[in-house]
Image 1 (cartoon, rainbow, N blue to C red):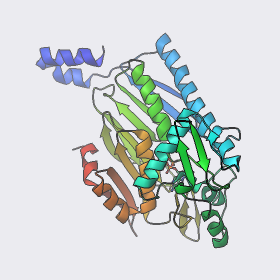
Image 2 (image 1 turned 90 degrees about the vertical axis):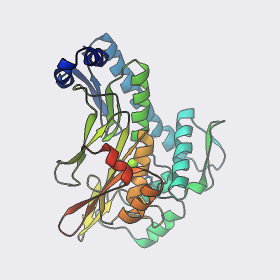
Image 3 (image 1 turned 135 degrees about the vertical axis):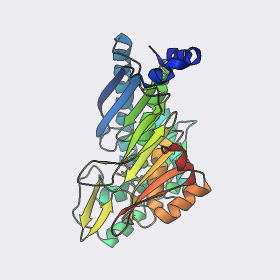
Image 4 (image 1 turned 180 degrees about the vertical axis):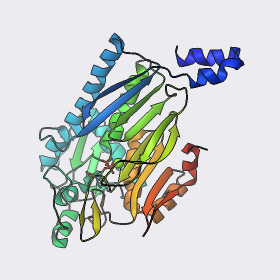
Length: 340
Ligand code: ADP
Ligand code: MG
């Protein structure tokens, strides 16, 4: 029985409303690996069949294609070829990559440079890129040298060509804070176009939901406790037709002399974020936007970040470490997604 049939029953037979709502429909989960993490697509009210097998193959090919274009971990990816080129002429890329870069540039401007895909050389210097990790903070002189190559104003995207252009030969772009969200949006559109109307797409913790879950309720999403050592649930948000992303310092970071250095870099200082905000969760219409804005808010920190979220009506929730507890600080718009 599909969700539409249930809603018809609800109209005709109020007596069975509770039973119908609580009824557990089948749920099919399609999973796989991509972008150094896993993906999951949950389809409510669906059982495995030839169409879902096709869909699974199509999803895998979408995420593989995006990874092949946008990963800095793949030497021959489009992004890596652009990064390796020292030319300051227009460099032809796919329309997809150009669109992603143009959108990332818009978010850089919107966030006052807190989100900046040209931060790549610093990500690599601090040991969070393809060159491997470091165990201690790096020298200020090295940071200052790399900072000279960073800045979204050194990068242009002209998607009528489509092509990218650097005004500094060392410019290097890193799409890691955007690509997973973007891939979620692409898979989401494909699943919707394939005729499904109750599903949840997730890649490495970035999500986008449509319709309702197998219990005919909004999808429930867990926000993790920002604990590097274990996985546990901090709280739940309820989503229908919304995207969700979290940026945190607890999965990819190192600790040195009592300070946690996160893989999120402040493009102004050239240094990893070390303030008290352990994670930021954003709920928005698209996963790419939520992914990028969560990173930007983490760079801004809890005070400036919450102020920014309020001014722009962004649904955001910070988990902040205080001396003895974890404090939850959310923007007004976030309340719409927390259970009553
Ligand atoms: P996650 O990958 O854990 O979901 P994010 O979405 O915040 O977390 O992405 C973090 C990654 O983005 C870093 O590993 C780095 O590659 C890149 N990055 C770090 N700082 C910035 C920044 N200020 N702007 C854009 N990208 C960044
Ligand atoms: Mg992000």
